[in-house]
Structures are given as C-alpha cells and as structure tokens.
Image (cartoon, rainbow, N blue to C red; front, top):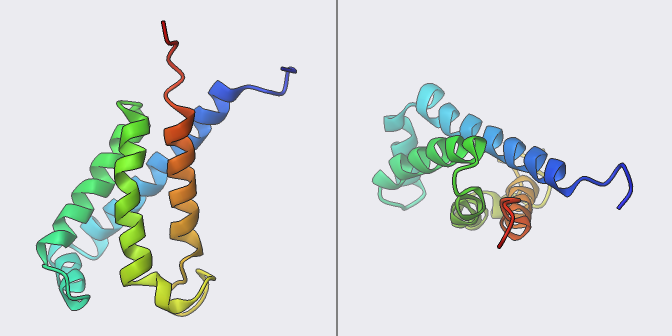
Length: 128
C-alpha cells in the first residue's frame, strides 16, 4: 500500500457522504413536502400513505446512524430496498438520466451502489 491508499479514510468519506444524502432527502420530505404531503404522494403511487412516514423515518434515522457510524454497514444495507422501491415505483419509468423530467433512475442506482459498497467494506473495526 502506498501513501495515497487509505481504505479507512475512503470508507469514512463514503459513509459520511451517504449519511448526509439520506438525511437531506429525509429532511426534505419532513420539512418541505411535510409528512402529510409525503404520505399523500406515496398514496398517489398506489402505496399505503403510512409508507411515506416510514420513508421519512428510514431516511432521517438511517442518515443519522450512518453519520454516527452506528452499525453503518447494516444501516446502508437496510436502506437499499427503499431505493429499489424508488426505481421500481417512480424513477424507472423516466429513463436513465436523473435530469430527465420526473427524474430518471441513475441517482437512486448510484446510491444503491454506494450503500452496497459501504456494506461490503465494513466498519473498519479490527477483527480478532
């Protein structure tokens, strides 16, 4: 390993980046769209409205857990079904590019890849 290789720092940057992204998306739903508005949007997709509240909880809670490093690899794995749902139910019909009208599925797919990478990298704790 050379002086520019630091897997622990790389994993930290990935964890913090994902944590901020999940947290910001959850806070957007909570503070801008409001819980009732988010639930209404989820209901318009054919899902039970309470799933919107669960999404807010998962994104805010998951983001905070990732930022804290608490069970980060498992939190990242647990958040991937939420993103898969956004691809299947919302973004998949809008094509690949997230810049497309309605947002394509490139961004959620990238977050899934990052979340899975964090899961497989682990938490950098030494194993005995």
